[in-house]
Amino acid sequence: MRLPPDEAPAVWRGRPRALPSSLVSIRRLLLVLGCVVALSACADATSSAIEINGSTFSRTEVNDFLRDIGEEIDEDVEGREIIGSGPGTMQQDVVSSVLNVWITNEIFRQDLVSQGTDITEEDRAAAASATQVTGYATFDTLFTEFVARQQLIDPTIAQELILGADVSIDPRWGRWVNGQVIPNYVDVPEAP
Image (cartoon, rainbow, N blue to C red):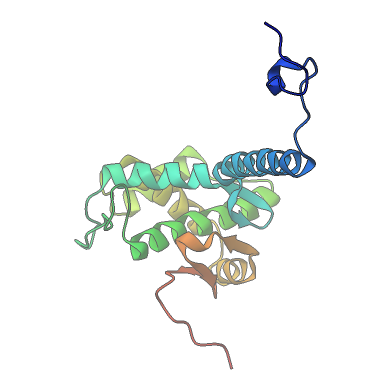
């Protein structure tokens, strides 16, 4: 039994009906928004978290480094608790301290490389014997390199390098103020 064309369901009428233009626009908008969200999630993991004089470090790189330290250490040399309030987090003042060493080490590395030099294994060994080793590989490696580089740079020049560095830091880890990472909960008075 055949129904007349105007009484038959739409799927029976040969050619499929086009969606109204408003629904097509909504579908396109949802598709574009989905792509933007997916791309921003990818960009978040690889976008720069710390920039030091043009050198960039991704959020993934910084997160991995901090996670490595957090997995090794439960309290710092002074006995302060390192673990933060949430799983896989660290106290913000500890993060600021670690990032201060990392950023300063990178500033010193850049300066030494610009002079055609950098630390040697002998410099590392001398720095390791001159510093208090914590027994935590990730932090000890960073701190030993920092001390070794610091010993190769005149203290006055080192201070100028730190204060003159062009540093930006993702706000989730603090702020770069007067040559150091400051936790977000610390109020810093404006310079006169």
